Amino acid sequence: MANNGISLLKKQGVNSRLLHCSDAHQFADDKNNTKPKELGHCFTWIKAEPTFEGLRQIIFETDLRRKIQTGSPNNKRLDKVIKSIQFVGHPDFISNKIYLNPDLNTIIGGKSSRKSLLLHLYSQYDRL
Image (tube, rainbow, N blue to C red; front, side, top):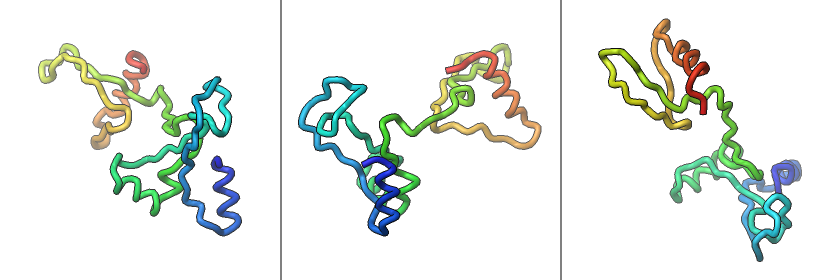
C-alpha cells in the first residue's frame, strides 16, 4: 500500500497510521521492476532515532515521520549542501579542510556576519 492507499484509509475514517512491511518470499529478479512478494518491492522510511522510543514517536506524528515510497524522501538540493569548508591563509584558523554533515549543520550568526558569503563562495568551489 503506497501513500495513495493511506489517503483512501483516511477518507474511510479508519486508522491510517501504518507501516508497509515486507512479506518477501524471494529476491527480486530485476531490482528496477519488483513484484509484490519480492524483496525491495516497497519501502517505509521513518524519520526517528533508531530506538524503540523513536519508532513509537511515529504514533504521534505519523504524517511528519513516515513515508512509503521507493526512493529516499531526503531530497536536498545539492547546490544548497556544503560538503566542507577550509580557511586558507587566515592566521586565526587552521588550514585543514573541515567536513560537514549534510543533515546536522546550520550556519548561524547575526546580521551582516557574512553567512551568505559562505554559501556564495561554496557555490563557486566545493560542490558535493
